[in-house]
Image (tube, rainbow, N blue to C red; front, side, top):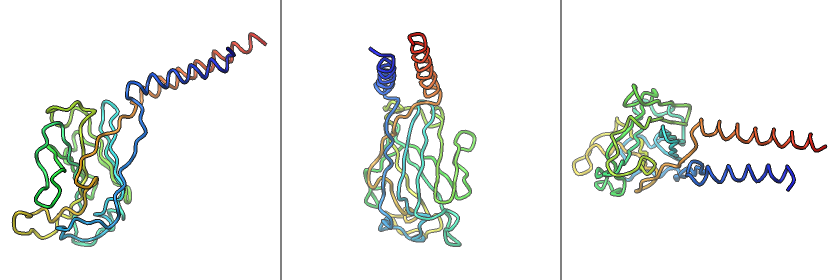
Length: 221
């Protein structure tokens, strides 16, 4: 077996070993139709409240939640107050939105991000807003302890709110502020991704293998 073939085998073996531990997966963001505002929404039908894609990943230490909106947060109409809410289910999520036709959005804790990029727990969460891109990082230690799921199995959903929306009579109440759900009437699983340290070790290992292969070729020349 040539050194080049051996190097390819090493690379493939390392990649398969890491993938087999569930540390590498292709993140597939959720696509959400534009303009699909919830029927009970009474806020501004503006792109700042309309999710067009969303994603959630977990690297073993941090949950990363992100989304793309149909318009920049800063362009929300005057008087509208954007708030972005991620619901998380750690195993016993029973809170839901059956009152507005979304009973499968089940959660037991939330993380929020306001229009200024401030999160609901600034000591632990890290939020950001860049035009129509919103994101929040949640350390594993920050949410309530698992109530039945392994952290890698936590579920999430994103719903923007226009908190200036008028309140309707019950059973809808202040749910009139909710403009969209991503995913619609469902929860999504976090996609596992490698920790930065894992990527570093993998890169060092492959670099070392390549260096040894070059050395063998030089000695055999």
